[in-house]
Amino acid sequence: MALPKLKLTDEQASAAGSSERRLFIEAHPGSGKTTVAGERFGAVRFGRRDTAKSSVAAVSFTRSATGELERRITYRWGTTAVAWPSRITTIDSLIIDLTTHLLRTETIHWPSGHLSLVVLDNWRGHRGYRWLANGGFRRAATIDDAGMVTSLALRVREPQGAIGNRGDFEKLLAEGLCAHEDLRLILSHALDRPHMRRIVMDFLATFDHLVVDEAFDANGLDLRLVRLACDAGVQSTLVGDPWQALYGFRGARPDLMNQLIQDLKFVVVPLSQSFRFRTEQTRSLATALRASEPVDLTPISGPEVVLAPTWDDVWSAGSAVLPLSFGRLNNQTDAATIVLLDQLTYRAFGRRAVFLDEALVLLGLPRERYLREGGTWLGGVVALLGRQTDQAPRLALDALRDAVRQVTGRRPRALATGPEERQLMRLRALAQRASGDVNLLVPGMTIHQAKGCEWDRVGVRLSASHVARLRAGLSDSDETARSLYVALTRARREIGLVA
Image (cartoon, rainbow, N blue to C red; front, side, top):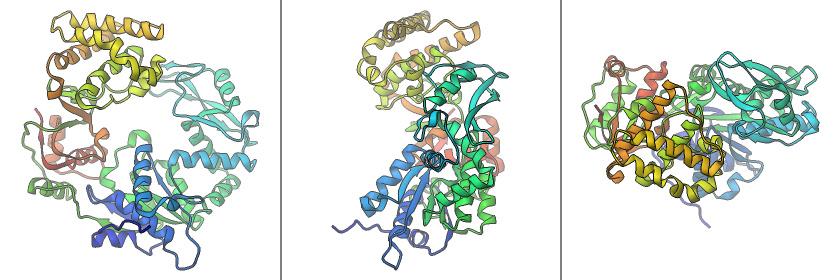
């Protein structure tokens, strides 16, 4: 069966078909980055003149981005394109494979002799997991001088959920359990030892070509792996945009990526033609932003979506906007209010609240049960919010805690005065939105959540300092400026300020 053909621009065709061994494809917003990454994968996979096919690994940094890239590649090139030994994987999955290889070659050793592991996103729900205050200590994995996996204590720099007790943590390790962060620490420590680094290089050398999508999301360990692959003779293609690097809070180091491109003499090929911007306003705005020219925005009415730097900023955009989250969770009441918010976001937009899965884990509520029964046991709480009385938020908060107890057997406890008032403020904001027609609400989200998305008409909620930055011109060396750039390049037809 003939494979589907793609109509590529000259820029896209040049990037996808380049013969350079080290290539950086600098992809502007809306320029077809994922399309070109998929075409590049197929070109290097099947483009050899001899009878052999190349082994290609394509790596991205989120499950959703990896899934979309795989969908594009299999549609264009067929399922044989991703058959072993080639693969499309998240960086976390590649790190699991590397750690497993170190275990099976007896380079490192896991407690109780495990050679395969159960890798968790985090330790929620497991023995010893609790909220740890700033200044305390949490446990994490490491390797000792003999290569045995053990644990170490790390100081808590920001309050977070983790395991603080050494005995609890090492029992879980002995059961073959770990979190992604633990494998990253183990691999990082392994790479500090020359003989272990050599084993990792040999594993990476099994690929003929490495394609790294969203390359500027890479952190220090990810970049070490890219360097090692290049040192091992693996041809490499990096795809990304320094102007859209937003994940410094996850450890991303765009400065180090730029240094790597320079040190290893990657050939830079731009994808500058955008298919997103369909009006003079959005086209000229994108050009001016990237040229670091001063920019002024005018107000917009009736946007399809509202974006802001933080969740608190989104909530301040007015009662016509229904944000998709309150932000990160600190306790079970936070989790309960996220679950309540989810009832409204799903009814209004068919979208689940951001951090819903974390909330369900924190409450000990199976996702399947919540999706099946949540509307029933939360219906009364939503009805209370719609009463528009002064007491409605307090009554709704009590009813919400009672509903959680009815389903899980545990009632979230009342908080100290400040945090409790914050919960009531959240429910007052929800009450404003629940009392009207939810079908008239506009979704709101943070700029980080909006990365990779696009809409016709976008509103942005910015502070006076952000507006001043735009008027001074942006620089891709500053993460706040890059965040503003991402926000202002999501619109196809119109973008403006929301008061």
